[in-house]
Figure 1 (spheres, one colour):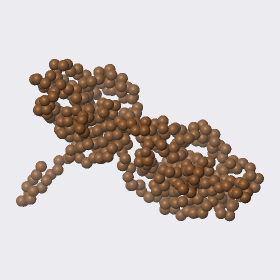
Figure 2 (cartoon, rainbow, N blue to C red; figure 1 turned 120 degrees about the vertical axis):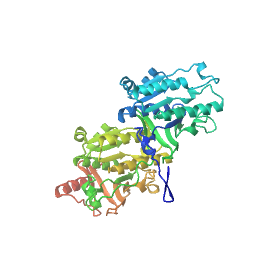
Figure 3 (cartoon, rainbow, N blue to C red; figure 1 turned 90 degrees about the vertical axis):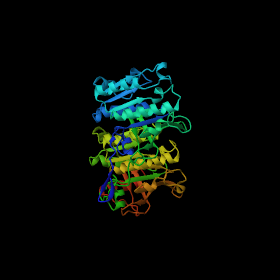
Figure 4 (cartoon, rainbow, N blue to C red; figure 1 turned 135 degrees about the vertical axis):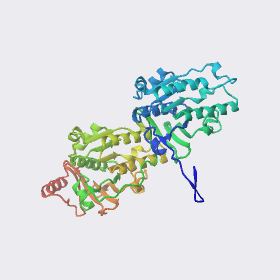
Length: 506
């Protein structure tokens, strides 16, 4: 709209209103949802989730935004639709019985789709009656190929498709129309709907290296900015969830607050204050050098502060981890019972990278931990190519930082320690504090000792020397360079006795 004021021409921009889908992550990449009172084409191959996207859009509208909806299906019967979504804990049938959603199954006979005298009047009548009967604000048509299956005349097709989309716009409903990709990079079989749609969403279900991954991409969105990348999405018991690649930016505020590592002698290496609150810590080293034990000590200390801690164990079961940590004086059992510690023991390959990342998102939202331990990050290698693993880890780290969660990661490195101390993952640049652990064999004494040193700790004065440490029945003790631990008198004598007698040292 333009105005003329004293010889000057000014332009007044009309705001594009949007209808939130309620689908996790999707409204973020579209900056608000689908174009309100306009038509969106959802295209995708078989099994990509087109129908479920439409149903989820209707269910979220009815339950979260007080917008009744109409589903007109030309392929699946109502009983089939009810059964399909019930397996995902989506109560479509219940919303239908409450009058919040109306489902219509339209059976098109051969004479209905003949090219001669083809028109959409019958569909318009049924659709208008359904919309008016419940005051629908949202409509889903599944799928458009079924409506125009018998029409080959491009002229008739274009006229009727434009007529359908114009009719939906005049009814002031936010519409989702599903379609199947055609040949020559077309997003529908007819290749016409994409030109009259206000928004096009492409869903894809691909399999690579025996791993299935679903992805969504916004092809076009008239009058609105939107994410242009491919975004992983998953289908679980709550419907669709999109994981935006750029969901968390570098906007975390700085802080001078500290949290203890759970090991007083290690805190001394950080000027006696421990880790920076909300930072990320990486403990890397070869097998058997004590990384998990340091992570367990940090988790226990978090619980003692009354803060919830989430511990992901990728190599040991919860029972096995709890039992093993008792040998160094770390008892998880009372804190698990109090609900302050939650151990999630799972193989990443069981879910795949994206589903596993989504489960982390959901658990962080529900459990609301202040501290997280991930042991080890290297278990994620092999669940995708290097770029996918790196992307997943970046988003995981960004998630924890955006929530102000102090996170302790462990990383297993190969025996050729000097060649790669970061664990072959390449996340060290994203880490705030990096501690390297190693086993050292003394040739003369034929003994093995454990050592650690701090590679970096952003914004924190820290000791950069190499220190030995021991794992004893009473905990973990880091030695200063003079070989004497900075402990209370009683504890110091006990540790010295253990070292002297070579007992209880693991």
